[in-house]
Image 1 (cartoon, rainbow, N blue to C red):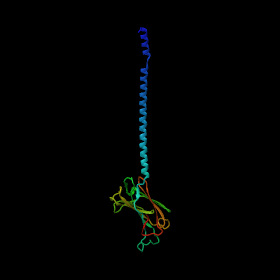
Image 2: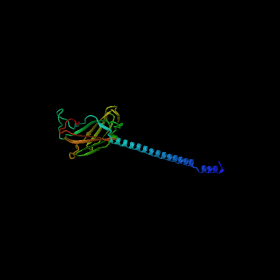
Image 3: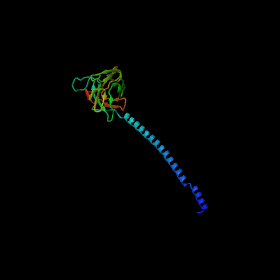
Image 4: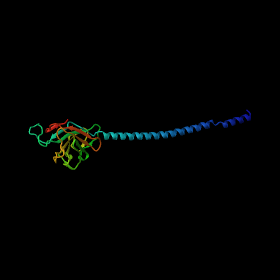
Length: 230
């Protein structure tokens, strides 16, 4: 091989930059992969956070919308006047419903709920009035549970006691509480305060968290000492 041909071969080898171009391409490709991985991680983290936040919000909304209590058994009403005939109808000028008694327990999936009078609100409504029962004078009954009293509206007194479970102010799963709502009679003989016969009424029990329990019943056309309103 002559010196000229050898020199030309060296020049051609020097001008061949295929290896350098491949290395640059690999570096650029690696850079794209790293950048894409960073963006993917950021997007995934944001998505997971958003999903968890949405899940928490949805669970909170379901908890707030779901009822904390469910009724257990029948709603019983009692007449305000005694009868001369056992089992007969109530008689008198001011016959009215003096007590409404019902039982409640925790709804499926609900957490333990307080039975303290300060933690529960009672709203009574009928065709003539609406009364939000507010704690005024705390009293303690024989069961050891607190209740309150008022004399200005139709609800005079509310008592809460356990009939299934330990006697305390916390309702747990499997326990049953009995609530007695004492109703007032008409005081001034002008306003329609008392709950009379053939009248539809509603009592709503509102806990601090979770949905409320609404009981709607209608009194019979003739009042008796004890009436099962189903």
